[in-house]
Image (cartoon, rainbow, N blue to C red; front, side, top):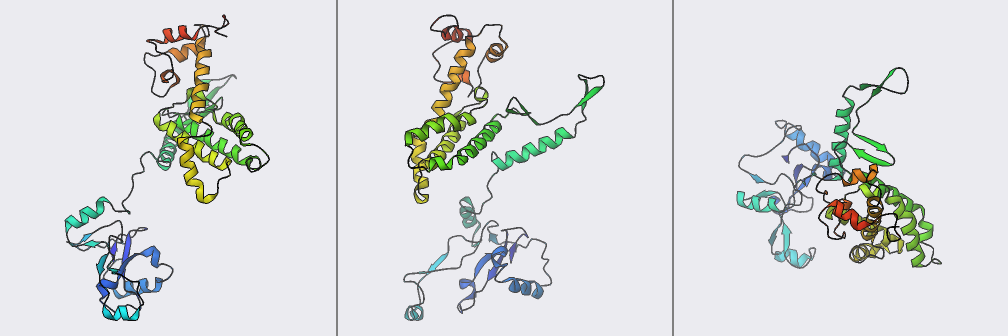
Length: 340
């Protein structure tokens, strides 16, 4: 037995019934979870036979080069014996045996661990890591005493600290992360897409009509708060993948071809979602820049010396300009025919 008493990290050396050869060659290392249903009694017998071992403590052998993450490195290879060939019970060819996570040298263990499939993966940047961070921030904000402020009534009101809040349909975060709002809109749009499954499956409707419904309804659900989004390379890649999966379902793709069609729609989509979003943002930008200089929305948009990456003012489709004032001049105004 090796490893720590954690899921997937406790291994037992198992000798299989019916294999009467070298026990160290024909035995294999198996996780405790794999033995829970079929060999739980054998595991209990092992612990009863070794009272000197503590079931709740880790077990390692000093000087042993063992991978703590897996129990299936590359097996050893040997030829079949004449008796095995005569019996015909094994497949033709060499015999693979001796699976285990123990290596002869530290160098062999190091080479294995560099590509070990059981190596713990970093959770940095994943949805679960972000969700846990939001939960931690929410708990920290809830622990801060509220602030007393004068309200509409006679008495003062308690204003609580929060990590996230929704205002005019947009989900704000204390850390300034705007992608969380986009993920919420993506989930809402995907739910709306699922409610129209009877339309996507209707063979009487043309593909062109389905794409118009997709653009008019589904994308409109998605794009609430679009001018405030950050559309950098990472965000565009995620949106392309999301769009490709929905388009693949819209086309009624069979399950066995789903992955191939998703990749095709990612490269050459029937409906270019990212281009549509950028066009909508640029149209909104033009209308906003044509407002009067005293307009609050225009003043908020044009503040700051350098546009942030992924913002609408940093879109590569904008005409060449050296300042926001020059860009506003290029946008025209709402008085002339061209500006309207």
